[in-house]
Length: 247
Image: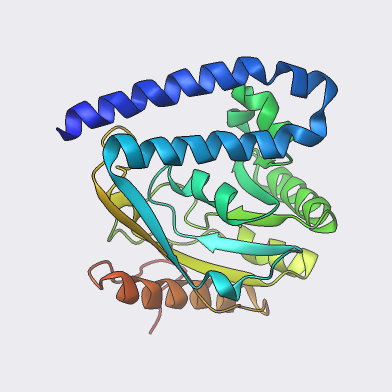
């Protein structure tokens, strides 16, 4: 049943993306201001299809902690592609930090740029950081809520990896508060992307963190994630190795 449901959803995702990608041409040419609302609709339909076809829904704890508008940073765990969709529904003006190569995907890539997402060239570190900070300042000036995944890639539930320092540099450069977010999305939408399982994905938003020293913020994010994991279920707490290890 999970195989059939997952197959149906994959077909739905591809078909919806192609149709909406083609229908987006008038927006790209004549109505750029509609790009973000259009992208939000695409994400809403994808998450709605996930509920109908796969029986997968989500819940959010701590949403009231987020400001109603204005710029801030979301530092979220990243376990599945679901994490790259859901904030389009939860925030008024979201802007994801994403791999630059995504902007080269036909139909989708041009819309990502038009909606004001923040592409990063991961290969060139110093150049990438300068570009990231420039785009962060631009997004903050436009009142965007910036979503970044400090783990740098999708990570399986229970797996612990060192956090990337970009989130601290962004917060410091643009004087933005950081809201840590824990999730268990990987339990229901696999890291590889195909299998989707029925159930309720949990998203737990922690208390606001103010940036001071880079290392302190990364440790505070990790600590907040652990607290969120305990609220979700407690099984995903583990030891940290590398630059984010705690005594």
